[in-house]
Image (tube, rainbow, N blue to C red; front, side):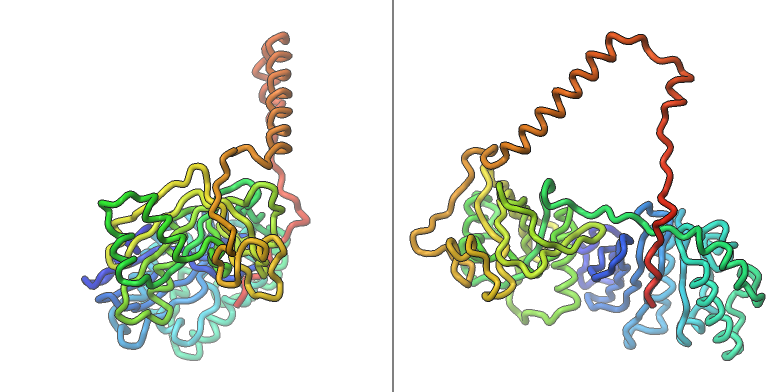
Length: 412
């Protein structure tokens, strides 16, 4: 299902497994199974994935009223199980509609449902006390509506489990955030826009040079007008997924032809890392005052023909900027080069970095020092006798998690 935004057409039912951008203060990755029927949004299943991929937390399952009673909830849940075939799954506490649906659903892997297993097996991923409370809520609703709720599969169904939960809650560990580092990584941000008809035809004409068409696009957008509201992702695919999400969930542009763009950028040489909110696979710049970047590539495609992606690499990169969020906090560096619309000011010309090492003297010096130290270590190793197998095994580093770390509680 990954990359299925390239097949969200008007034929039949399509499932799309994609990122789900939500501001969560945890390291788990938000994901979504999106169901499309006849080109229309029919349902969604929102969930979180632990960084090691071995735990999944279901947050919400929704089917649009016109598409209900077509088994779409079960189809999306089955897809979640298939996408994470070895992970523990927490279904959380259910609402009345949820307990009725669960009573009719056949769990494809009940042995991976944490409500069916003792906390000793999954407590490092989920707070045992919170899970016990969710189970109590589900049991009450089952009783209220006269439902079975697969009680035979549940761990010690109907018993008081407060003591057991308290015993295992200390095993709960917060996952460490491993988001992108803008200081060293290239990042990808998306923009969805409507171009004038003639420009649209030109930039989607594959017979023309890609670099020429990319510069047409950049001139139209403005060198200083890269989107401040974008989520800057570690992959280009994620940037295009953001645009496809907008196409599905946001107000449509009417009958106009739309273009989806993905910018590949790195921070400009000498630019300090601006304040940013870090997530598992993406970041946003906080109240951007105008973030100087080097634009190293641009890709674009039509959502009507997403199987054709046009692209251009810029070498050397083009000088550009992420637009300020508002005019009141525009940085002096940005204001000296761009107007409030992101256009170059009179007398300011597009420029490229002719020297890829300019402004990176400290970084290059640090790398040279590391290489020199590594060379000395290898030279010393060649003068020493090889270690015995016992010495090798005794020297292995065993990773120990910090017991002071605790995972943020699962939001309801």
